Length: 67
Length: 264
Image (cartoon, rainbow over all chains, first blue to last red; front, side, top):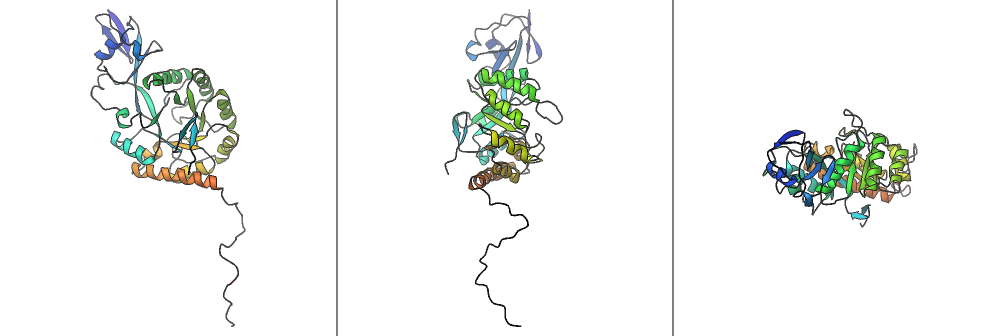
């Protein structure tokens, strides 16, 4: 089993997942988001290629109102 | 009047930049931004809410990036590292967009900038090709340092963020404006229209505000007032005010041709 952190919460993966799989699982497929994995940005074009490993830390962000 | 604001080589007709935070809803955000005439709007970068985003509208649907220039900020960041990571993500989110607002805070109560961390973040960001507009203290020496690093605009506070206390130290702002070779914007502290006018009369190139509009009783009407206030201040600055004549009146009407007093 693979455990990854998604925006600070632990998620358990039952099978090997890519960043794109993970976004789908979190209901974010096709949404305008940006992803950081272990402190590095994962470009959108690579979401389908990058596999997640045990202990990976993902940050997924959007733009919200702010000053 | 053709008098564009030029930031990082790009021209803008409006000298008012507005934030998009603290509105009742996205409809009010859009109405206020439209009334302000702003072309550059700041946005914050935050984690998606797990399980909440499916089907919900987003800010970007209401303020299309095709019409507005987004200025992603680093509000809430207290270290250079957090700020740099946030803006790398913003650049990815906005398809390579380089224009950003850097702010590194030093204290959660007064939201005053942490200048050593701000300088450190600015160096990294400029090296990575970002066009950095930077929130800073109103210290002319640090403003110059940020300019020397390569920031495309310096944005000293007029008073602390969200306070609405107005222009507290016009002398420091003038010291920064007189030396700067990049646009100087007042960022933070404007409370009402006259504050924005004073900032522009001092020679600021533009004003950035959020709470002054979003926390007004009628935000859309205040946005319209701010648009006019910034324009009025800019025109007054360009026109050049009359010299102050302290303790010396000068009539505006002719002093000749007055009626003679009737003989007593």
